[in-house]
Image 1 (cartoon, one colour):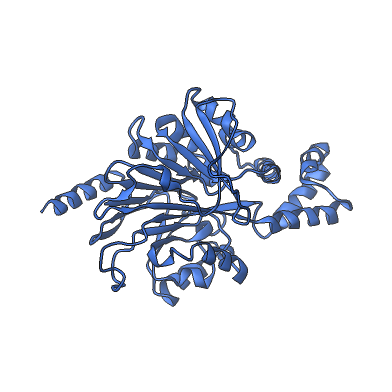
Image 2 (image 1 turned 120 degrees about the vertical axis):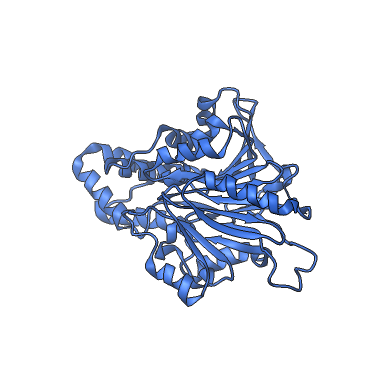
Length: 395
């Protein structure tokens, strides 16, 4: 049995998978402006020094990573998987933070330190922490070396590069769907989104009348107010922000039960977490579709990308026969989720959609013949629901 928790953090994402044998997996842990709620949920969700086998970070935006420091402080985290941080990506993220902080959206120090040097950021939390930092290569890049390890200053911290599509669960002993011992899989894909950076640089050149590299932006920003206004103008004109990469994740099993090849009514426990992936447009949708060709028939839950933004959704994605969910703040400034997306899922394609906010979370209990979805406002309700299911199983 597995309990999948879509936790109520408002405009952000914090998703936990708890296995019956005590294993835990986390996908994203952050909130735009509700960090105290994140801390509260971590306190309720995990005991002190509880082992988390892996944290998957879709990308390094505040609303997806701001709570990771608190997870690392309280729990024993074995590995963190995140998109490869290239120099270009590092510069783009620094620019994004610089501009957003100028408009009052503060980032905590851990996020900035992790972007600059993940190893140093981890050591600052716990000097003797043993952990693997797994950087997932972009889907169009391949590393032929198995488990390519980098030298680290601290022998207890291992830095590893893995290809998109490699199964991270292979390294986790006992991560199984316990009722029938099917092997659980964790398949991340890191998708590059270079067009946004190219657009940013082209607009900077038009605004300043000369080519300006990403490295030069910070220096020009500091020179005078006129430059800052021009850079902000260019940044705000982008169709979206400078999310340079977004890492998706399939978490599930390829088959459930002996009869499932012939029966489409079986419980599909697989989930596709999408972060802020841009599925809008045929090419971007095709890239995602092809990446998970082997897995679509095992996916029963899908995260609607980017809090339900119309810019990130595609009809082909929201028309799958699956249960959909998204996280969004009740009064967020971005007007997420898009009502067009909500209507499309619920009325055009007749799928279930759960909208998780800061006041309501979603719990899912999955077994080979049990599938329970329930909304909750108090974490205690999860424990009570689990207790009832265990009693049912014992009958």
